[in-house]
Amino acid sequence: MTTPGAISWVGLLTLMVDGPDLPVRGLISSREGADDSQRYFGWTAFAGEPMPVFAGFASATDAEAGAEPPEPPDPAEEEPVLTRVWRSGRRVRLERPAGRPSLIVGDERCWQFRGDDPVPVESPSRVVTYQGHGTQLLHRRAAADFTGEDFTRPTGPVGEATFLDRPVYTVELAPPAHKPFPTQLLVDRETGLVLQQRNDGFGSVDEWTEFVVGEEADEQLFRWEGPVRPEADERAEREREWQADLAERADWFGAHVAPLPLRLELDVSVHVHVHEPDGSFEASIGESHLGSLARRPSSEEDWPLHWSQVQHRWTSDGWDWALSIHDDQLTEAGLARLKQALGGA
Image (cartoon, rainbow, N blue to C red):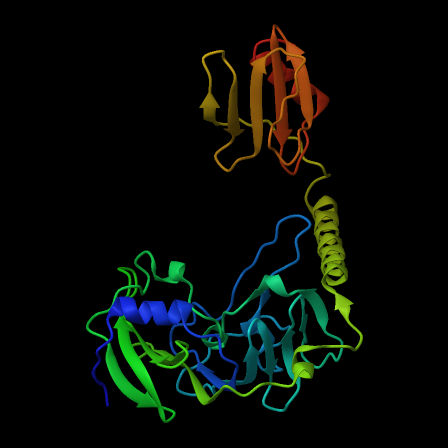
């Protein structure tokens, strides 16, 4: 039963963001409910950077690990995903109910186990994101999580209750305009960690079903000394598979539709980002940013354009020009026609 609490919303925020960093262990249960918008995640990585590691993927059931996302489950029939966890500072260990590790996070490195593969993928621990299948309950809330309109404002005062025989604060957060139901939180009074996050409207609930505070964990839990597969190697393998698939599709097109490459003539828009009194400018080409174009008064000085690449540079009629076309290349004739359109060869 919830009773009115003495703590303010600001006080509860402070506890969630800056609470004491105590070791914890236990079991997290996650039932997604009717809203599966947070069930799967897309991801990107900048060139040379390792791919993010989503703890929620690592702790998925064996059937889900490494597989294509299945059809959304029937909330009434779906079994909750269970994850056994240990956390000590930044170090974390996640295990499946059968006792096999799914993710180990050390001080510098992390090891993600895929399905039944006994050899984990090794990545820097800094790329781990605690999201999905209730793993966000392991992660202390950042102040930035409570800015904007997306479940950041309480619908009423903070209350008090008991959960897992522990005193907790209760609060309900209003949804943004594009979502129909509020979210309910139970926050542990000692640690500031969220012990339960649910959405009664959707029927989803992430919660600790076992929660033990203060036990010092065996340091070996947060280490892996067996064989590993470097993340860079796995990414290179995926890149090779992707390129091979692209080549196969291109071969099909060439055999069944038309020879490649296709030659097109396009009319494109130009979006000027900056321009100066001396006539220099930088611009994007095309509505979907097909490329970049810039010019400046002709000069021998360096021209530090912060583009990923500059494919073409030339000087004409007192101007230095720079051009980059993303993904594809202009033919020599196409480049000549562009130079002519810009006012000189």
